[in-house]
Amino acid sequence: MNILGGSFLTREDLSKIFPFLVYLTVLLMLIITNAYIAESTSRAIKKNTLLLRDLRVEYIYAKSAYTQESTQTILIDKLAGEGLKESLETRIVK
Image 1 (cartoon, rainbow, N blue to C red):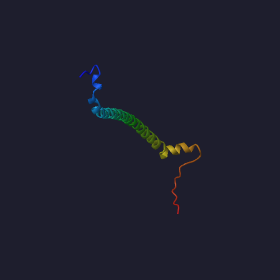
Image 2: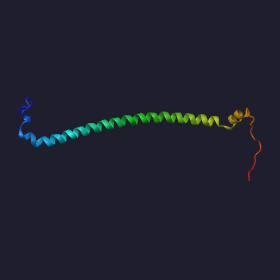
Image 3: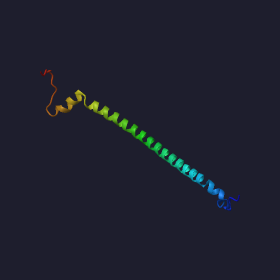
């Protein structure tokens, strides 16, 4: 069998194994495509994980700042300039 000369391609045996070679070629293409998609998905998951971590830190910071700014004493100080003051008596609404 002369592989380098190409004479193996002209024999009748090739016509018998040609469908199998096509099958193997399609399988190899599917494996390569699957590996590419898996790698792409892995990169996207890693990117989204980092983004989620950053957004979580930002959320915790914003929540902490909101909690601190909305305490009663700070609100009283901010609204005192507008003429509002804290009510010292309790009223029961019926």
